[in-house]
Length: 111
Image (cartoon, rainbow, N blue to C red):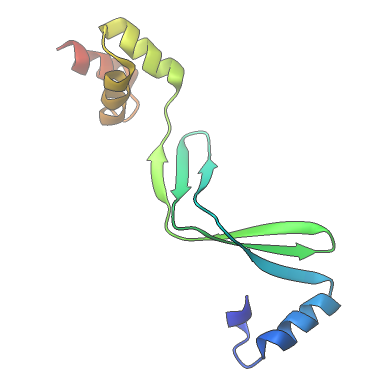
């Protein structure tokens, strides 16, 4: 935020933000941030998190490079393991290789 106004002294900017009812601080000690959607996980292990508060509402800004991982249903993993007699780790690996295609994962593990 402070980089967006290069000609302004950071202390002046903080004072201006306080006058407008805003505050911003870096969240210290962040080890990892994970965002889960229905089909993917975005894992930030190098995340920098800033918290901006405006009139009681907080906004979290995450900066970093996420590792994007496809999510798979544990039910799918258990189904593939059950149908093939393989471990859940083997079933998970087969599902990952088959891009989540249950039938293909079963065929790959059965062959």
